[in-house]
Length: 114
Image (cartoon, rainbow, N blue to C red; front, side, top):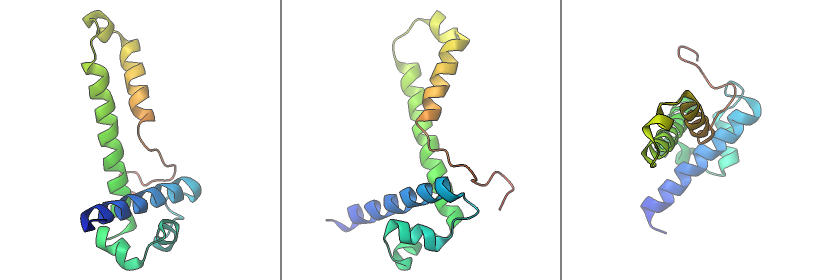
């Protein structure tokens, strides 16, 4: 496996492990050791990709936002009548689908939280 591909696989494993931990025990209760153990990696591998638990959370949120944006763009770029697109019901469904395309994790820090 090429180094770049292996690095991306490791980065994704870290992010998935972090999401599992954040969802399972909450952001505040999750330690780096929990994420590292769950991902099955070394500390060095973790620090190669991320500086802190907060940086992993930020990467997960950024990826989720990207998926949400892509889902919204896909929904609004599909052929539909302008009348339907103007309907509040259309936007509620579109945003609901986009929300389900993202990762939610209870206990994640809000702005200003540590």
